[in-house]
Length: 148
Image (cartoon, rainbow, N blue to C red):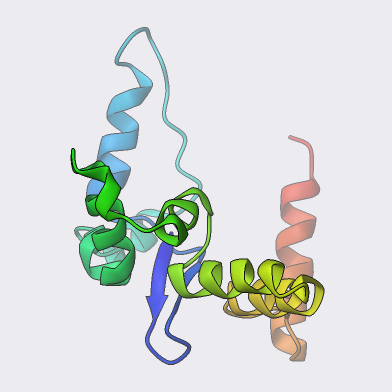
């Protein structure tokens, strides 16, 4: 899910649990056009502790992105600058996209690309560092690798 980090002032993709409403909607899709089954890979207890609804996108992403996309949809598209027209096409936060485009323009895109990649991910070190987390990871891998 795309979220906004107020500390780094950038958008980041994060893996988070879905809401109960999202789970209900997804199970409804399983049998909509033909017979189907919905498999949920979490417990009933986990389902009870999930948030009832997900946070609206308007509250998760920075207003600069929303305003830019809204401006591009207007019939008077000429009021958007050339920079804005390029930023809409990039799958990046507006600030990072602007940084990247200026890096290309100033012929220093290689280090800027590395910086933008680093800032677009919340935690570059995904693997657990403490022993208990590593043990849980190995246990989960063992369970999911077993063929039933």
